[in-house]
Image 1 (cartoon, one colour):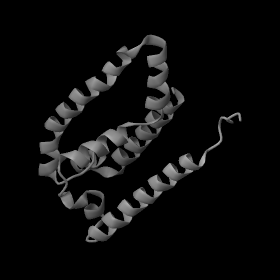
Image 2: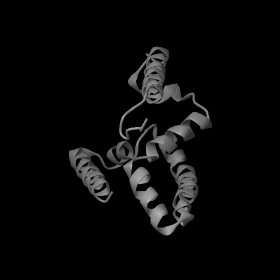
Image 3: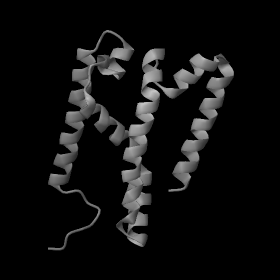
Image 4: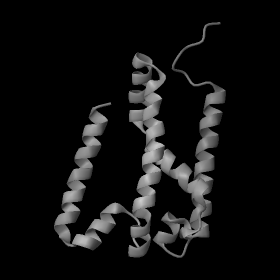
Length: 143
């Protein structure tokens, strides 16, 4: 019997269903655990250790550029493109070491929040929104 490509088997559907059930359960569990505030929900009450935070940063960094762009580059030029990701480890640790004390002292969570607090006004919010949209559009077009 010939297998048809592009059709999901029962095992595939089972893995997808398990994934969505686990993600939904973790969301409900963390919502019930940190009901105090929105910051408590999004920041987990500032009580997480390094492993889930690192996993979150890693998962947030993965996108279509990795699955399509790096895979294509690896296929055409070899495994050397993996150095790109090893370099990211060093850079992320350095940036965390550099900016984390400033964020903690300021009581802020994100870089746009810091810039708004430092420079104030509606213009910085509009400017950052436009820059974020343009960066998102052009990085997704390039893939």
